Amino acid sequence: MNLARLDLNLVVALRALLEERNVTRAGQRVGLSQPAMSAALARLRRHFDDDLLARVGGHYELTALGQVLLDRTSTAYDVLERLFASQADFDPAEETREFKLIASDYAVAVFGTELARVVHEEGPGIRLRFTQTPPGVVDDTATLLSACDGLLMPHGVISGFPTTDLYEDRWVLLVADDHPGVGERLTRDDLSRLPWVTYQRTYDAPAVRQLGMLGVEPRAEVSVDSFQLLPLLVAGTRRVALVQARLARLLAPLAPVRTVEPPYEAVPLREALWWHPVHTHDAAHIWLRETAARVGRSLAVR
Image 1 (cartoon, rainbow, N blue to C red):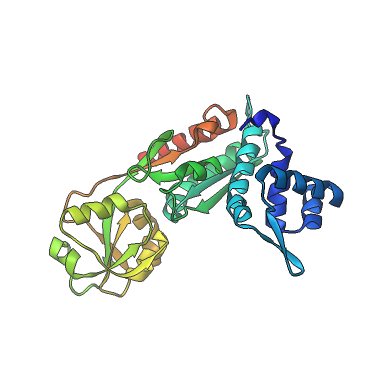
Image 2 (image 1 turned 45 degrees about the vertical axis):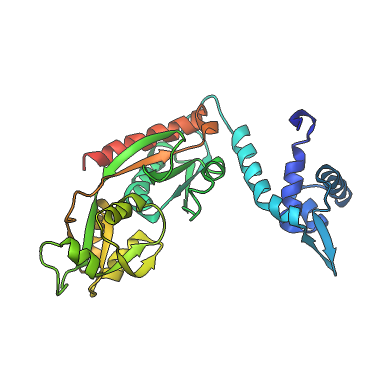
């Protein structure tokens, strides 16, 4: 396909049409008259050789191809927006910009709060937006990274993209303060015998894989998509959970729980910032990465 022959304004029109599913509303959204938006729809239909919007009764619905294009168009729009927002120079004290970072609640609590404090001090007009990491992060990482400024995730889950290391953490086991069957130590048999609270996504995968290699198959009684809920689901029960030591210290006042060292040499956690190569030479993104690395180094000495 010859991109030089394409009108990139059609990306804006296509996104509005697919999301609004109405020519008039789509035109109002992007500042085009109804005839101009109808002309854009006609051009898009010729290009894709598909109706994209099909009338059903008194309204329009997306065709099968339109449904496929819905997510792709949103991603393409975000990529183009970030591409043309790239800057040769960046002064955080003078700029107004939003950075979107994808992260687990663990990464936001342990790292994101400190990053937000530093950004507020150095760039009062800069905004940070943290969004939860989706379950399919390993399935289409390139698309995910192309639509954001960075992904906070430990090594061992994804690879093949630019990254900068931030800080290290370690895994500990969490049990109730008054757990009747656990003293100062846990055995591997305990880990197989006791019920677990598990984080249901992939970010602790290396640690969980290590348990499997040791012959320990956690019996999950409860699973949750928030690391910060683990102490609450452990308190007052016989359950055990695997949690990051930094987060465990941070959440210690919230629930009557205690940490126990694993009865094996637990694989360490190396948190990193990952980004799409399209951002590598952007001055604003360079500042973001350097600031994140500096914040990570400050955590390393705590």
